[in-house]
Length: 181
Image (cartoon, rainbow, N blue to C red):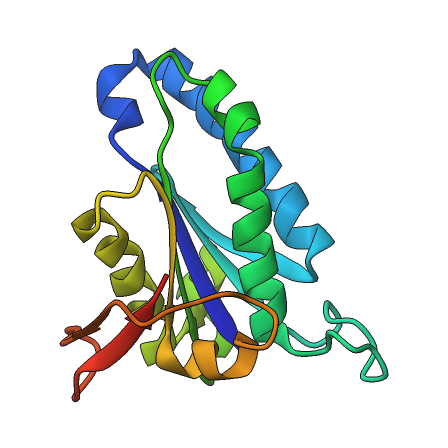
């Protein structure tokens, strides 16, 4: 399964709480639409962050499809978010920044929490790697950036123009990882 993390940067700190809630609802609705259209699901919303999953049984296209590769769908969704830049930015009084980190690995999807507050979520090292890739976007100062891991790059390079920009030691990885925008 793939985890993709996207995050808005600092908006809630600059807006009154009511405006932040309204903006985030509109933003989350737009992200959800893009992700569902790309055969994924929004797994977790927290502040300005969205965690989206791809390759979940029942949400992916049939195996006969040429684009059965769920890494393709995660990258396609991230690019669709970039294409909606003006729509999302029009929601905010200042420019909206969206950073996406995409990694592929085995994940466990299950209920976590208390018996009266159970939440369905994804668990696994891949989630942490996607979150760290999302943070890498800030290092490169591109307000609408997408970074993918080497594992994702290998699966999507025939469809997307990516180039290696760095080899980084992420906290979630034992060895340095090549990253691609």
